Image 1 (cartoon, rainbow, N blue to C red):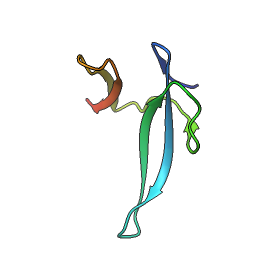
Image 2 (cartoon, rainbow, N blue to C red):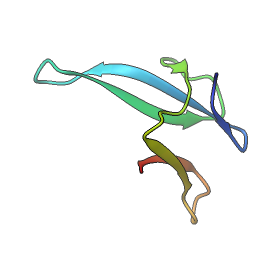
Image 3 (tube, rainbow, N blue to C red):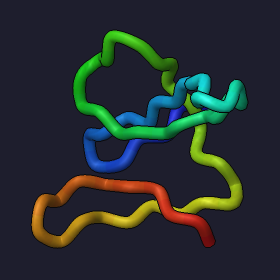
Image 4 (cartoon, rainbow, N blue to C red):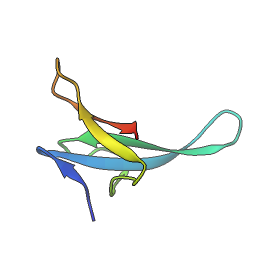
Length: 61
């Protein structure tokens, strides 16, 4: 199920690091980004909101 927070949708994509390792990154967007897929919030993370900008972000529990 796709996670949404106050009009923001959570997206994820796998990126390849310089060492050859693959890592999943998560980000919020109100529009459909060029790359990435809508995804569910990981169980080990919570959502915080930046007080100054109002942008949501993920942080580890």
